[in-house]
Amino acid sequence: MQIKSLNDCNVVQMEEKLDALTSDEVEKALMGLIDNGAKRIVCVFELTEYISSAGLRVLLVVAKKLKKMGGELVLCSLKPLVYKVLDMAGFISIFKIFGSEEEALKSPQEK
Amino acid sequence: MVQGVKISLFGNLILFLVKATALPFVNSLAILSDLGISCVALAISIILYYSIKLADKPADPFHNYGYSKVENVCEAMEGVVLIGIILAISVQAAMNFIHPKHTNMPWVGFICSIISVVINFIGAFYILGLAKKSSSPAIHAEGLHYRLEGFISLAIGISFIISIILRLNGLNKIDAFVDPVATLLVSFMLIFPSFNLARSAFFKLLDASIEESSKMEVIKLLGKYSHKYCDFRDLKSRSAGRKKFVELKLILPEDIPFKEGHALAIALEKDISRNISESEIMIKVEPCGKDCHYIQKNQRCPYL
Image 1 (cartoon, chains in turn purple, red):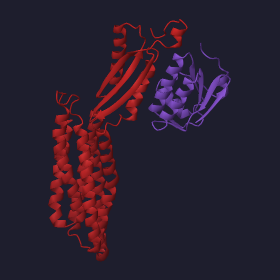
Image 2: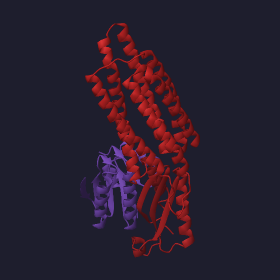
Image 3: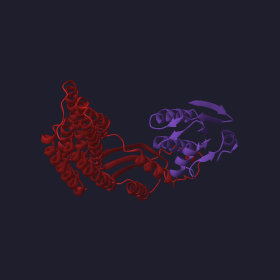
Image 4: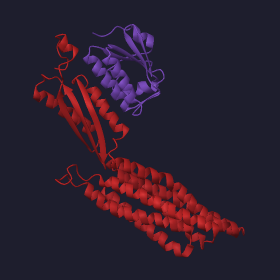
């Protein structure tokens, strides 16, 4: 999983699959960023082909923790199938979702 | 559901009688292996009949979570016994390759197989329909077993057709090998479904979490209610027979009135159980530590 810092944002390139096997590792990495003071995390789903309930759980838990610390979780570059899963789970209304990493980085943080 | 088991039991009894009647006339290893499978199916149907009744018993001081796990025990038994039969008939088929022998009256074998195919496929259609309505893993396993037996009987029926054709063409030497080939084909068709059945049942006995579609329902609802709670933790699930158990901890603002917090937990429990059939949901409520940035910045808690 690639992580980089850009303009006070932590940009995280998500794995090809976000499921029960990979979700623990992803959760640890994201929580680690929050513990180190991250206020804005942009998750890039360009390479992600599949997301399961375990992956959605991680997104929800991380979003909650970031909100608690006054930060926000933003998603971008979702493939159609992944977008469909998030839509079916009702997560489209919960998360800010952008078409590309650029758009996500340009958008202002919610206060 | 008991009706489904009775139909299955009756069907397995008919199949057993048809094959047991045909066997002395045909003297076929393939029919013998099919009869063995029907014996197992009949025994399992009888056990399943009593298991379903036991699974429906309410929880008591000796089994605080009820008896629904007995259905997984049935599933596991079916898988293990089928694996045993596969091994036994494969060994016998291998020996018949070394000492090949002819079957008698292949047309009797063919008729027996066709009757079995009809009963199996009609039975499978009905039982799988019932399993869908009742969410019973044991009834579902029965339905799959019926369908699989249908394909096995079809394969055996085809082997008898081949045997008849070979005899009509004077190819008696080749005909002697048709029966053991059909038997090995039966073993091959059974091996993966049997292992999968046993494996799935044992996983459930080891408290594997519920299936993905049910987990997704829980996450969907946690998302729907996300504006009402601070956080959630320790989301766990397991299944026992038809029953599914889900538990989690909901973190609420420390200052939320007890009644309100309780009402929220109950509302979420009810919503989850409405979306997952035969489920028991337990939500424990915990107070937040007042360690969020809203408190630090003297802002109003968004969850109150």
